[in-house]
Amino acid sequence: MAVFTPLSEEDINNFLKNYNIGDLVEYSGILSGIENSNFYVTTTKGRYVLTVFERLNETQIPYYLKLQKHLLDKGLSVSGPITDKNGHLFSSLKNKPASIAPCIKGEYVAQPNAQACNQMGKMLAEMHLAVKDFPLSQENTKGLAFWESSLPSLKPYMPEELFEYLKKEINRQKELMNSQVYKELEAGAVHADLFRNNSLIEINGDEQNLGGVIDFYFACNAPFLYDLAVTLNDWTINQETGKFLPEETQAFLEGYNSVRKLTEKEHSLWQDMLSAGALRFWVSRLYDFYLPREASMLKPHDPRHFERILKLRREADPKDLPWI
Ligand SMILES: Nc1ncnc2c1ncn2[C@@H]1O[C@H](COP(=O)(O)OP(=O)(O)OP(=O)(O)O)[C@@H](O)[C@H]1O
Ligand SMILES: N[C@@H](CCO)C(=O)O
Image (spheres, rainbow, N blue to C red):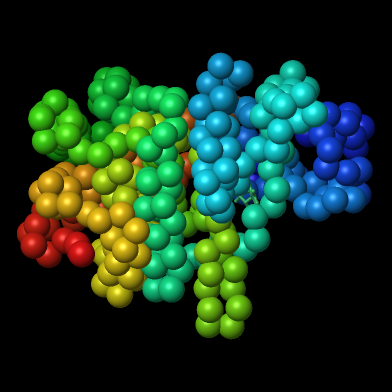
């Protein structure tokens, strides 16, 4: 639905002069995506996605692009920037930062099957192992500080009882984050928004093969278990009810655990992390729903989806939550 910064053929030709990726053949705006302006660009050397950053500035961008480059250099199939002729990961277009990445094969799949879930589980664990030597750090911009600061703005819009529930859950997570056991969780730079619509899957008959992962612009340093919870809360649920799909969830967890072994300590915090993973998107969706960005052309996501998921995870008997 969004190309915020329109580009002419001349703009793109000038941009491509900074790169060794051939000459422009054709280009078109990508309508999905709500954060940045994205374009498919075909050159004499291949097919690429050009991104003009609408929200992030030049000081914020290096963390995200360097993380993608780091994962790419470790052989992972993620969308990642091509360096320009001067060795830079991004340059500028219409006075905004912009980068270009090779196109990943595949498409958005609404309900990935067990095969794709298993592959996503493996790849997520590989991403977690791969960041052990990633030197940069970035706070979760949609974490505790954001949740707490959103409360006063959300209060007037929410029924009192629901607002109190939200406040209680935020306090509960705050207490957890201050605990020793939480601080000891293995952590690093994680995607933190790895939904199905940030993954591309190649379909071939009944076969579904993971093409790769895109859109790292909510990446941050957080426990790996949090990233796993965020991903599962979207990838392997019944989209109507929010309940986990047993076969897909198991396939995902087995894939993950085959690469990075989940620990007993992580198991003990699983219910809290699944709740945190739901809370994060409940708050951001409430915020975007009641306090949309000025001149926003976008239809906000339904916050009730993650309210439902949070309640399901929090109220579940821990032994009924999927685990390996
Ligand atoms: N490397 C890539 N290869 C193939 N397609 C891509 C690639 N990067 C982006 N796309 C396409 O562009 C669309 C928008 O990209 P993206 O999700 O990064 O947009 P955004 O505006 O940054 O994010 P958001 O999902 O937060 O709205 C994707 O849904 C995908 O179809
Ligand atoms: N994946 C998010 C949008 C980006 O944070 C959501 O579905 O609410």
